[in-house]
Length: 129
Length: 129
DNA sequence: CCTTTGTTCTACTCCTAGTGTAACACATTT
DNA sequence: AAATGTGTTACACTAGGAGTAGAACAAAGG
Image (tube, protein in one colour):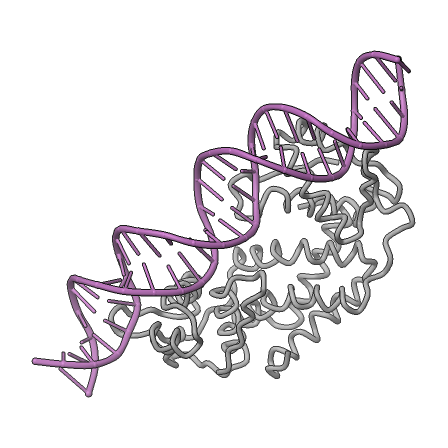
């Protein structure tokens, strides 16, 4: 699992980390039951603070993508991650909405944006940037 | 142009305003050459600060969706908004990417996410939420 | 001339992000 | 039993974004 952090990015470090872990799960590189490094080890490895890793873990725990077993360790949701509920799907749509609107203003057609999503799915599954 | 601001949202006020103006453009309600309210009038109308409206305007100006004519007023890009460049399309894709990844983790199929985008396009063009 | 326009400046509050250090409680390992 | 490793919590500090507020400036437009 290779993690690349852009320190000069506007997206917070903890979010970058969480998102890359999410891609690892989507790609199948991180499977249910797999354990993640301890907050201290991961922080040392990535050259960042313990609390930043901790924040990323709690972000993922809130989404129920991982389980934080107190005083033991962190593992990918062992029983598998359930399919998106209607609410989760709604929340995703609300987050994508402003981006789709921007695409429309930039005269992108519905098909062009659909293709963009299809390509993203492939890139994520391949692990390419 | 009806603007609704959620003061308790995590997305900044100036961004909510800018995004809703973007949807207005996408919907065709705001056409090239149309003028927008002055920062003071808009702020008073929306019950927010002048600087917040100003920030939203500059956000839109940076994207070249509007033109701020100093000491005169603000208008929608009069010559029409050009089609997305490759760079703009790339930037959009990068912003959508983490959301698509999250969808994949939540076991949404490519087709389900494509449908989500198609529905969003329709909702935006209709002006429905 | 006078109102309106966007712009700029200062000042202040509140919150997030990030780093740093330290300690705690408990599980696992030695 | 002791040592180590785990997530957790607390406190402190810096830096910056977001929002509000008031004031003033320079120029366009009626």
